[in-house]
Image (cartoon, rainbow, N blue to C red; front, side, top):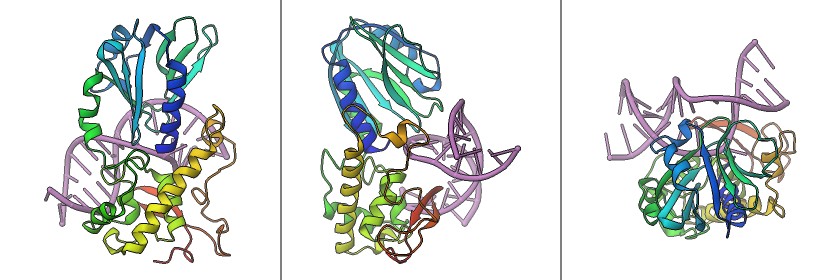
Amino acid sequence: MPELPEVEFAARTLRRWLEGKRIEAAEASLTRIFRGSDANAFASELPGKKLEWIERRGKYLLLAFTKNVGLLAHLGMTGKWMRIGRTDERPSHVRASLTLEKDGVVLYRDPRLFGRIAVHPADRLFELKEIRALGPDPLVDGIDEKRLHERLHRTGRAVKVAIMDQAVIAGVGNIQATDALFHARIHPARAASSLGPKEVRALAAGIRKSIDYTLGLQGEGDAIEYVEDPGAENPFVIYGRAGHTCPRCTGTLEKLDLGGRTSAFCPHCQPA
DNA sequence: ACGGATGTTCGCGC
DNA sequence: CGCGCGAACATCCG
């Protein structure tokens, strides 16, 4: 599910759900979601606590509760935080849940178990290696074109692979990268080091544009439909549209494999 | 039935 | 050390 916009949305939603509510009970199933951490700590430390703050860095969520209890959470590919009523039937693949005082249940569902939840002292969340390894966050830090140019200049990798590197820019995934390069009119396989200042500027703008666009897709409390229910229409600009007509010219979008990920591009608008 | 999917990490070889 | 590649993780969907 998640790239930066969806994770940002999850952060806002969780903030709303948890704000001011005491956690009455916490449950965790012993799955690899808690790898490198302790599922027992989740269940034993959260009851009685209240949320103090939530932050997002790249695709990571950082949650701080009272008594210095903190969570580092990542949605992986299929993770999702949901809220249900206490007596509602639980969905399948629930890996962790928080029962809120005088309220419903906030739960984490993740069929493929690619996501993560780790319990750490709240005041040390920002010092975790996962967070320290991240490059600038486009929403929190903005995209510094000079810095991005420097970073891209010293690598021979394809530009698409480079911008999906979380150490280069935090939060860009396959969808944002694909659409951002289309906006910027840059071929995904171009060597990152070959981009000129104007192209880097266009790329920075393209990343911002695709993130803002995706953030704008979420309604009042609703998540992106395409992500939510299978069968909903693909709302992205060219992601997942190989074989279709380019939204900007009369050409046909093509498919390309880079770094094990599929992307679409327009051979006319994004020449090699 | 088969292939592919919004992510990360690890091992291998060059 | 940088980089590309493939695999692994586990499930669902068309």
